[in-house]
Image 1 (tube, rainbow, N blue to C red):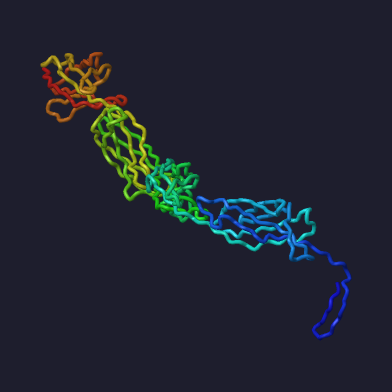
Image 2 (spheres, one colour):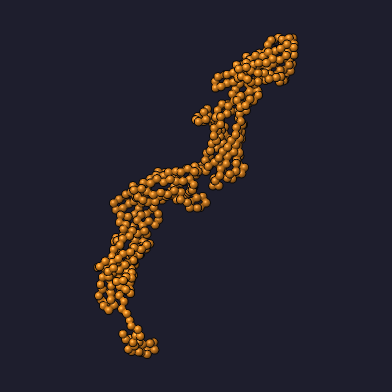
Length: 447
């Protein structure tokens, strides 16, 4: 090959000879890259890519032949698909788009059949998918959960196609929200089944006051996404402890404390605890009194106290304390405690003989009883107290403890000293069982 040259000044050189031998290189091109369908949709997701690889010898530029056994690299926008040409130079491959918009290209690759060939990339072909409308149902659009529990939302998702609305299977559905501090959370996620149905379990661990149910995602190539507003509220766990004492005068003294642990919780304006009682500790609970909780710290894990003493409506019952929760704090209840103190009385009390001689014995009679339900029963082996008020005095003085036999009959005597009134009362606390009785009296004349 000889070359004629001319520089900028007009000087020329003719018949210049190349110092090296020049080589001819075959060109491999794909002039007919085709994608079918050109606009894939939900019912036609798979795209078939085909074309023909042609080999062109530069010495014969107007003559091209099919290039066989040439590897072809197809770029789908997010991943590559390989193919190999057949004897007629044809190749075919298929893929499913993962994006809504794709720049499709194909390039022949080096092969032993055409060593040293120049492989030319095809021009880009722009593909875009059709996103079909989506809709879904939800069994509820609001959940109020206690901390540590799980709620359930059920429903069915559908997609609109040229055949009408049909079930949308194998599609994610989730509850996405924003916490009160502005953090994004996923409060629950699942996938629709073959019939488009779903069951979404929503945990209370991630409270999202502002949330939405969403079917699909924003970048799905063949379907739109659908959303519905949703409200998720969590009542945080509270803890309550209490102690109680039933007194002789049938007054019940109760004290205790309440606290919560989660920093996202807050005390209501006027928190209260309700005391309740029941005959069997299982059912039929009745409210006895409501006690305010005194807020001193207003912080997580700090105990806030309550206390009250009041006359009980029942001295043989099971008792429990219940913190009256609000939307932010869950109700909590103590275990039932059986509190028993039976009413007592003394019947048939009298002192004899009357009159009695001075320094002679006075014996006392009567029966000490306690009330079990609606029945009065004898109270044995107990110690009713004996008091004496001399004639003309307004004050009783303790004298001694009397006793009772197995029938509850009073046992005891004293020596007569002066005129006056004798009184007996069961007024000592004996364990946790009995309430004190009223005094019964009898006047004795001493001569």
